[in-house]
Image (cartoon, rainbow, N blue to C red; front, side, top):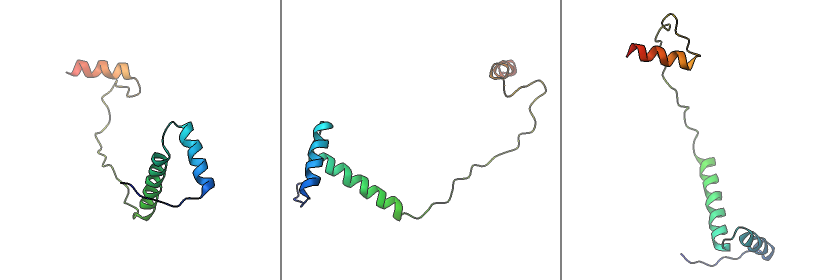
Length: 82
């Protein structure tokens, strides 16, 4: 959509320099910056959600001889069980 805005000359000059450095257009920079600003406002206005809680289950103690810190030994044990 095309629209007209009034912007400070010094700010426009900064945007032109940045657009040239980033090989993009002033319009694209303004659109991205407005989008980031709106996202930030939306996040600040959103109510805080409850933290996600993960259910845990007690599966008991590991079998004797199984070292959960030794991946190779654990894989070998699991292959023998299959």
